[in-house]
Length: 118
Image (cartoon, rainbow, N blue to C red):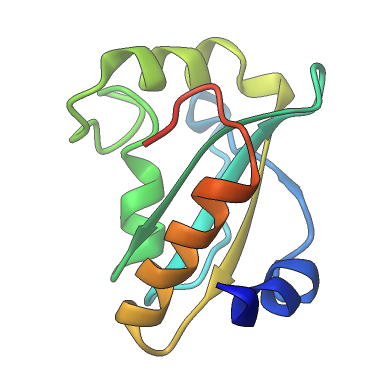
């Protein structure tokens, strides 16, 4: 796991405000494999993280229908993100290989505390 430490410290995008689809805003993230991390800037606490072969599409499922893809099984996550959207920030890191993205996701699961530990 030590191999991921430098990637964690230097590989992320900058933090961005989570887009509010009710205002016509959009997500700016890699189209392919990657990992995302959300935090609440008001509490400075991490909210959740995840990985996908199609990161942009996966992140749209962080909001309930009709605002997002709404394909998640956990309504609590979706409702939390939507009701706190003005304070939610995200960052991403892309990977060419989805297996590396999954290994990196395992690494971040153990180095941070998340409100929703997926």
